Image 1 (cartoon, rainbow, N blue to C red):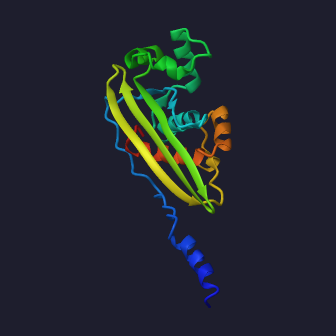
Image 2 (image 1 turned 180 degrees about the horizontal axis):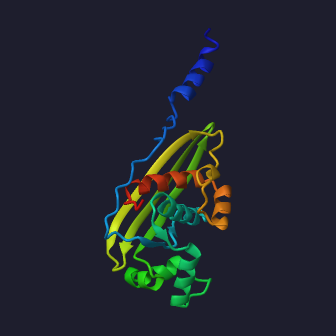
Image 3 (image 1 turned 90 degrees about the vertical axis):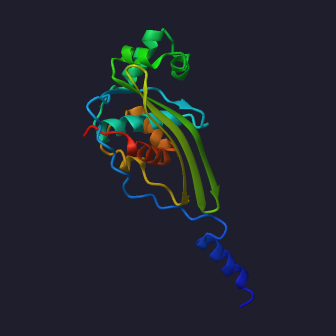
Length: 216
């Protein structure tokens, strides 16, 4: 009995969370968003997101998920991302060698809204994304900032989400099971399939926009 005690202790540590925190279960449904009033912007453009996370595709994935969330789930009218990007480059005479995030940093939101012909601009930045794996356990940390400005450049909504998830390292849910209804451009969907960020980014968007006013 003495010989197997260390082994039993090791098993108990792993499966009871003695050394590693057990994964938290995510709620099956997020809170229902409040109804937007008549003066809330309806025609929106989601600007290219900033990215300081170290994940090169993270901001592209996050932006596509936000566009899908606003259009399909919350009922807003969204400008296509490629149209938004092309208009900004055309208006600012900036070539592809200059990142759009750099171009946007020098522009006034009210002027951008007028150029794009929209009533509101959704801004965003992916701040952090890290993933650590210890034996059979993984922990992911995602942080992002989102805010909405109206046609006059006034900030109407703002949220920073800092989520942390844990899970047994036995594979993750396919992102396509979440976005099966479409609404994701092929290029962004391809990045989602290949990125370890996709599942965490989807959950973060669902959480962040649970309090965003809805049109439908």
